[in-house]
Amino acid sequence: QTCALPIYNIVLLFFAATFNLLISYFTAKMQYSKLPKIIVTVIDNLITHFYHVTPQTMRQYDGTYLNSRVNQDVTITAQFIYITLPKFIANIITILGVGVFLAAFNIRILGLFAIFISAYMLVYWVTRYYIFTTSMAVKETSAHYFADRNGIFTRYLAIKAKELLVPEQQKNKQLAQKMFGAMRGNFKWHYILSTSKISLSILFQTVFLIIGGVAVIQGHWQIGTFTIILQYFNILLGVVDNCFYVGSEFQDYQASQARSEERRVGKECRSRW
Image (cartoon, rainbow, N blue to C red; front, side, top):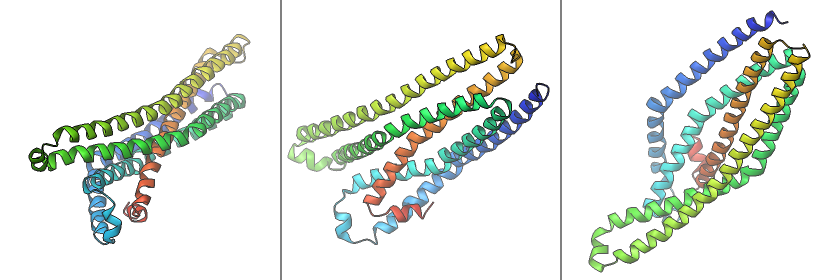
């Protein structure tokens, strides 16, 4: 088992590196070549869709505000589907591959890691609703703020003629304060999630170092074996952390989809991907 460990280590690292290179190539090509075209096409299709709905449906939205929402939601949706999701799949495959290695070598280490993932999932489950609602608040308040600020420029002549600059700026500052408040709320829950993940990571690294140190002292593991297991354990910690970053990004994506449903274009939007 000890002799086969370095060979398995090399093979697993080779396949993991090759797969990650392919995912990196795909996401880079999408981000810098394909994604802008997809976003433009989807927005163009949505504009066509807007002109086929009833005027009563569209009258409730300010044009500048709707433009800001559409641009933001389509961009976030496209980035999640074509950039974030492939990276998430790569992380899952890495977890499965390294998990098989740990299970073959020492089932107790795999059990420790399973407890670690369960603790992560619990933290994410508790915070996900608040991340979703605060993300929605940030999107809404920022869309209103930038729509109002853009209106100050587009209504330049009317504002100047009626000497309305001061009240317009005051209204815009109030919208900015609402946006900053929503951002602080969103930051708080992201910070809680991030701090919890870091604390759990330190805790489980400490537990693993104690278990591995005792195993080396008692002669159950060699130093080289312990080093390899520690390497994979740290890889898994990093990959799981990336997965739960995707989880917070998924809540942002969900908020964009919810706003699309509110505009009654959710089905139309999803059909364009």
